[in-house]
Picture: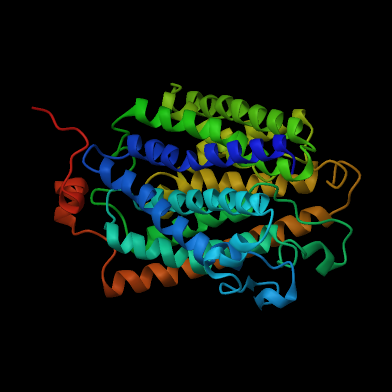
Length: 411
């Protein structure tokens, strides 16, 4: 890469890194005032454990470009092929490779942090850290390789079916959003409902903090979606940026329109959630749509996700901060939308059903794997060392009981 590409790749990585604190603030404002520290620590703890594991072996597990380095072909690269990246450090001209390691780590940390939204107000910290390390190892590191590494089963799905199309997931609709949403659903089931769980029982305690998180995430998403364009001499970067922007802004409109119809009022948390819904949906599709279709996708995502957050009350699972309703529904929408509107390969743009088939198979396959492996890991932790705090601790406040701190200490 030339100096311009290196500069953009580094900047993109840094602003994506900032997205995990953004997730912490977004989630932190939505929880009870007595759970803010706990919520922040779930994200910052994920940054610590996942960042270290990514450098030690996670990056290698997601590399399946050659059969020689694979632990299981099409499924997982060898974690010991370059443990701790020592060989890479010894190689000449390794700037590009190390930047790729750093950029990839920011996705891994953010994905794990997203899962924590499902267990707000009731999770113990040390079991969460154990879960984060195990889930990253047996889920995210593998899934990232499936989706983005040549040789991964999702990456090669079109060839496997004999199609002339490939699976499209430019920045993580399956690997990040569907993956984390399926995990959130499984973990919410394992930990059970909060005390007094009911519609309207819990409200955001600090809306400005939540919107600060939204602003950080909105900014970071341009690096999230556009960073990899540095590897292709900025090919398509302008389209990626305008599609990301268009879907997010349309998502705001879609969400608050449904809010206004349902509740009679448009809320600031709804506007922020709508922006996130639009960003989630455009993540897999940002490089493969005309801008007009990105706007439509954002509107659909905002509206559908606004309605989907009611699912937890209908089906009785306590996904505290609506990871399933926003990242799951938005992720599936963005992935399947490509089957119809992807430039050149979508059903409405000269293609047949092939693109839709690979999008559906890839997304459902990742969701099912994530759901099962997360349930196994979470259930094992809950039944051994315990994952959830006691009801008394939940009512007293997780922050003080688990961390000995208060977010707001007034004289």
